Image (cartoon, rainbow, N blue to C red; front, side):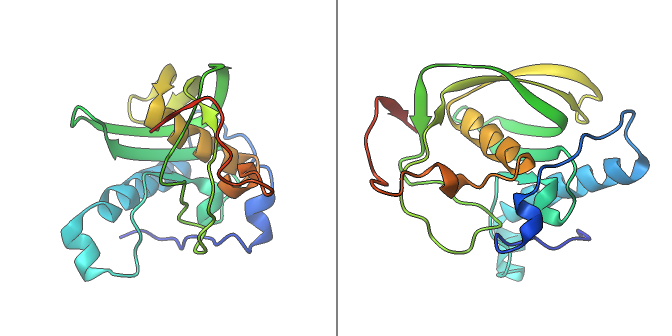
Length: 182
């Protein structure tokens, strides 16, 4: 199925900034993005997981997590209205974000991070992202809110060499601020 391994957080490459991707996409970059999205879909398929217990479920994957320091991310999840949300974003940039904050009450996780990191990661509740989306094959601007906003910010962080636990307050990991729990 996929031709890559997930890079773990002890690898130096996960801490490096990714380089922008040339458009139009090369066949290779297009295939890589499609593989990344397919990986996420399979990682949420119960039948597939029974056959591949080593695979962990994920909703987002950034190119650095498969050993490529390129600004590409894939996102796949089912929203609260039971709608499929899928994105294959190239050169994503957050162009605006809300003052309002949110966080996952259960804490964030990451396919590249095996160890548990307790604590809250506060992120903007709403972000607008500009990118090229291979799903629709054009430049787009998307507004993400709540869970979607958390996912896209987490993945864009990977492109800057930042991991979710970098955002946890070391002195007070469960410090409460005025934020919406997701």
